[in-house]
Amino acid sequence: MGQLNTTRNVARADDVYQMLIDAHEGKTKDESDAFNARLILTLINHIGDEAVIAEALAVAEG
Figure (cartoon, rainbow, N blue to C red):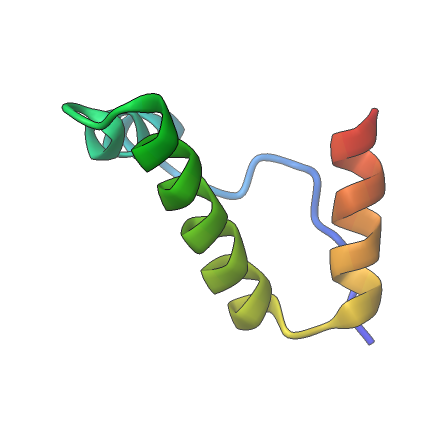
C-alpha cells in the first residue's frame, strides 16, 4: 500500500501547469468540466491504490 506524496514531485511544475491551462483553451465550461473528469479518472486509474486515492480526496477536500 502506498502513501500520498504531497511534496513537490515535478521538476518543471510551472510547465506542467501551463500544459493543463493550454488543454482547456477553446473549451466551453462544460467541455472543461468533462475534460477534468476524464483527467481525474485517468490519473486515479494510474495511481491504482485505493488508500492513496482516499488520502488525495481528503487532502483536496481541505
